[in-house]
Length: 492
View 1 (cartoon, rainbow, N blue to C red):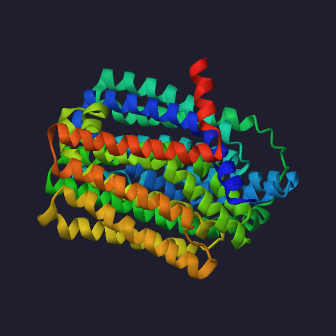
View 2 (view 1 turned 180 degrees about the vertical axis):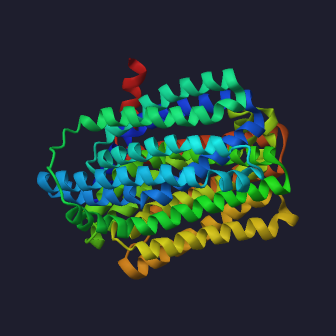
């Protein structure tokens, strides 16, 4: 397959769920805006702390199955071996159920020490205990989503996410309106249950044949490979979650819970907008890499095609977010959160290097190099946290965003240097040209936000954004008839 054909295939796969991702993000943005108005920085900070804590427990108990299972299912599906697929899914679901029960149990046992660690008192002991219900349902829901992803039923995944997000957002807003901060825990529980019900409904549509009974010994043999790879992803996830909790505790100690709310706002925006592109791509990209993991030439083509598409789709968003960081905070949250701009502009700048390393980072997992993935991921987190901790007295809030930027820069250098030496994967000349153009435009946008004010700042920010959009559309049109698609939409 030529580079152009590979890029076209990648763009089509992204477009399949891209619309769904946009809808999902819009729902989340509206929910976030309403919650920010109702709860303020303090309430948003509590939501962020509890969400991070539950995610950490879910990851500890999950053995990384939700990620590693995708690899095994996609490899079997690529061989068109329905019997093997049904066997893997049967084993996978059995172990996901056990991990869901384990996650709920861990939450119940450690609810008191968690409350003390996170809030310096026992005020959320019972709240965290009740979140064991949420962890149980979200773990099983993640398993259903993993099966859909492994089967590359991408459109079904998108529909499931939209429906679950819409329904859970409505319930969450009603609870926050009625109970304010007391509605946080019930909201998280209901969200988990809704995700379970909706994902199960769409999972059943896959109509995967029941493999029949599998002995526990056979189940262990089948799950051992998933757990082996999943172990490394789970170590990374848990380490990241613990670092995230530690960072929030550090910020709360240095400022207060409102400071955590500002960090949560910046982090949510930086993550949310980028997931429009990366979320759509990852759904199909990782299963695809897994199916060609033993062919370095095909991997090289796939990585560069994915990098080309992600640069063209995500860079204009990044440039816009850098140039209009203050407006984004006011629009998506409120004027109370304006202090988050100091973090957001540097973190978004780091996101540019994140999207460059992102396509190549998946290769480590697709090839089953779990130790390598774990080592480089933990090293990234250590660099990030170290700069925040040791630089706080000099940089304050800015240091959180700046440390993210530096850590992402180190990450992208390591990822491609190692991949070139080990697998022969490198950034193509065409991608290097695209990267150079967007770095130039990003520099203009950042300079205008950091050092200018008034009309001239607005002019440079708008100019950089418009040029980046035009540049992206020009290159996307060489892959697909973007102009023709736009004309068709306008004629409707």
